[in-house]
Image (cartoon, rainbow, N blue to C red):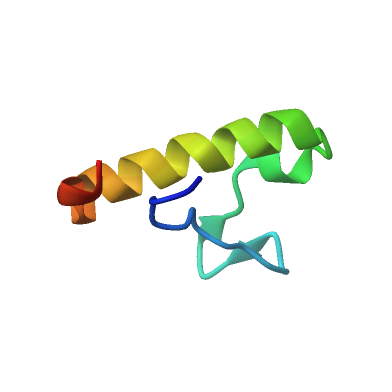
Length: 53
């Protein structure tokens, strides 16, 4: 994930003020979680700092 903004971070509880942690993060499947984080980092970078891409 070099050169990208970080993916969102979540903590407990799994739901807070109506916002839920994505199910993939609760799954325990580290490969899918890493892929999700990479996708989120790319999308966040495109939206906020496209000059980094």
